[in-house]
Amino acid sequence: VKWATAASGNTAVGCALNRSTDLSVSNGTITQITFDGELFDTDTMHSTSTNTERITIPAGQGGYYLWTVKCTWDTSSTGTRQFIPFKNGTRQGGGGGPKGFV
Image 1: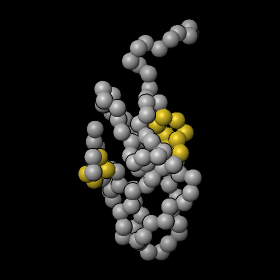
Image 2 (image 1 turned 90 degrees about the vertical axis):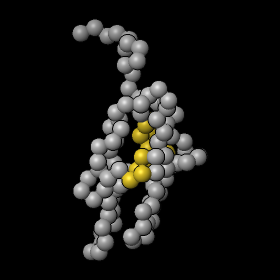
Image 3 (image 1 turned 135 degrees about the vertical axis):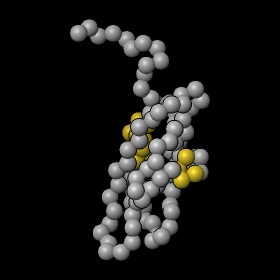
Image 4 (image 1 turned 45 degrees about the vertical axis):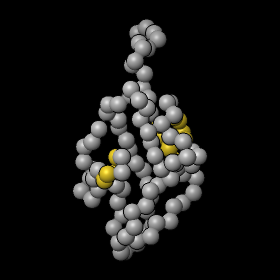
């Protein structure tokens, strides 16, 4: 094994976001999750001051991106809890799981 510099264009890009406080969501309401912290952000995909609910893929970096979500719901015997991704304001899935999208 020999260490070498990665070839140009083969560098991973992405971001990992978090919230520092709990989010209260009313029953039956679709609520955008705002993020006030970043674990990392390689290419300015997220802002912690403007449109904090968005991740924007930079021009020229389109393709396939892997996203994962980890959240904790309060215990309740009523209602349904789900995470629904949106792309450009259009619902991409939810309920039975997200649909594929690029």
